[in-house]
Image (cartoon, rainbow, N blue to C red; front, side, top):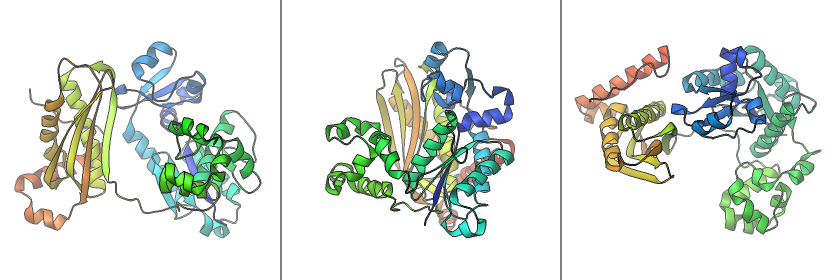
Length: 394
């Protein structure tokens, strides 16, 4: 019988900070997003205080005192994430990295090799990661990705509340407990459904995950589409989303973040856009993709979104090809009399870059720009993300 594990790092960014500064353990700690815009990770004590995820920093620091607020360091967290993901490949070659702190494992073909039950193997994985890397993880075990995701959340909650189970930090959904779990689980908490549909489901008397399973396929497809029906099958233990080792290249890449304080400062906002674009271009080069379109976004204090976009005749992959155009888009939408709360950049219409074609058709200037970006990547891999920054002419 297929068994899928979801390994989920507990309070990952906070756990990384505790790894480098053990004095933080047991304290109320919040890690902040880019430019200290909002809270993106909380320790258990911070959660117990009622500090919500995504709360803007300027509001949190006024409302919640005696909390350690730490500026996030994504390069540091990425390095620890890589170590964890590499460790997971010791147990099975079938590992799908879902996010920086989550991965699915298909252990069906390796159970005989390990000579352990799925629960025992999950317990070993959890202990090994804690002992060898220093990060606490919760692991959900079940037949499908959707059920494993639910199981991992139960494992995490049991750990926080000190609820005893066969293996600490591990929970398995199987034939013995699946009906009870789905009956008690609110439908809006199903992975992939979301809370926005809460009122809609209540209107149609769909209260629990079990109610969702019992709903007519035509009704689900009509209101939630094909994905809604596949989700129902997953909840029934039928695999619709197998663990995949092939990381599909993205169709678009976007980066955005709230500012630490509302601002009208033109240079500050431009620097935030520079930061977003650099992170985007790193990802473009990772997948050997070029962008044929780009948009720049500013969100005002009162949550209005202002955008400007452009398309290119040839795909772009380097910051030095895109900075000038990005700033021109910014100038079209920026108003010094408006107060802004966040900024963002998105590239889309992505296409694969053929190195041979580039060498034949691109200009010498473009070649130099791309070589410069490659050199930037190498320096950051050696000395750390953010070691270099783009300066702006006055």
